[in-house]
Image (cartoon, rainbow, N blue to C red; front, side):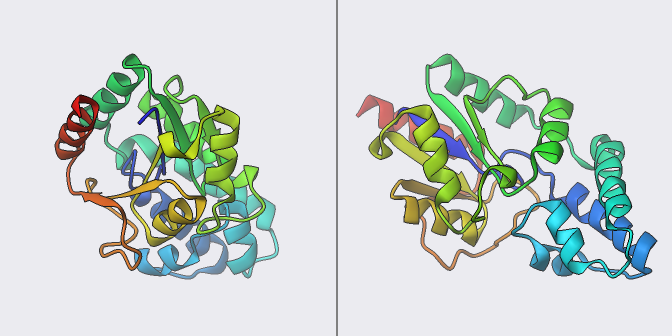
Amino acid sequence: MKTIIFDFDGTVANTLPVNYHSFQTVFKKYDDKDFTDEEIKEMFGPVEPVIIQDHLEHSDKESAIETFYQTYEDKHSDLVDANSEMDDLLRSLKDKGLKLGIMTGKSRRSLDISLEKLGMSDLFDVIMTGDDVSEPKPHPEGVLKAIDQLGVSKEDVMFLGDSDSDIEAGQRAGVRTVGVHWLPEVQTKEFSHEPHQTFENISDFVDFLEGAQTR
């Protein structure tokens, strides 16, 4: 295994709470509507501005989009805890010479906020966001583009994610696909598409990688 591509929300960082809160702030402020976390989750797929354009009734969508990003940045430190175990994993993989990537449905702007806040901006060799694809997950476009940019073969790639759309995207791309449920908030509690492996904690994943390297 020479390359690992990660989903971001719910996989690398527990950013789902700040996502929910930022959307809820927008819909309350502009439409005076209260949405639950589950209702917000049902909107996921497109990048955040498209979600707002598709679901907000208020006419001032550009202002609402700016409110989303401002809230996301302002509340990030309060709602997203740093995860030293994940940070150690990524830096260890990097030190061992593995190529690391991100394939996320987030916009580049919100991802950059999270990477900067979490001190992870220097860790990834390729970053593919929802802004970089015409077809969001579960379409494999983003995974395939990341592989192409890295110049690696599919046989050497593993893709990790916490949602059904991640698992389907990885499998349709033809790479080893791993489901993870190691953060407090995940998008899919039980996968409808069976991953090659599933890990409930980071330490078990580390053990798996070390075992694979010694075989």
